Image (cartoon, rainbow, N blue to C red; front, side, top):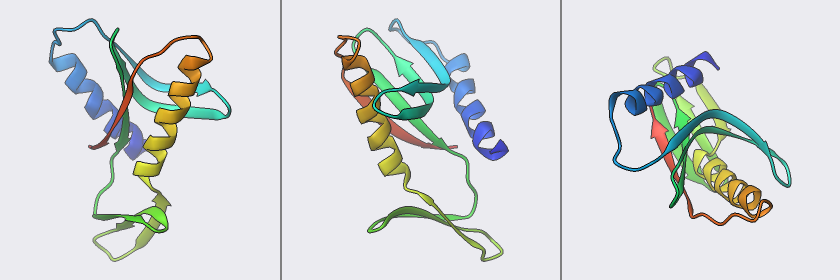
Length: 117
């Protein structure tokens, strides 16, 4: 969990370091409820669109598979760990955030990006 939080902090530094020419807000570690509870690592929102960042801070070799959808991490020592696919996670979060906006009579394009910190 600490490594994941460290990755999110690395992304935060980007937002602090650069100025953007559009009006925007950034929300970190945002927990919301739509048809189900969901958590967004980082939400970058403007008057024209929302961008959800799914941040991963993992070492070793990473492999994302479609069937089954998962992320497989192989450490330098050869230990293999399996996690939920960040692609599936991001697609679900984009859909849930779009639903959350609609429940509030708000329409905004929602995009997503996976960040490997």
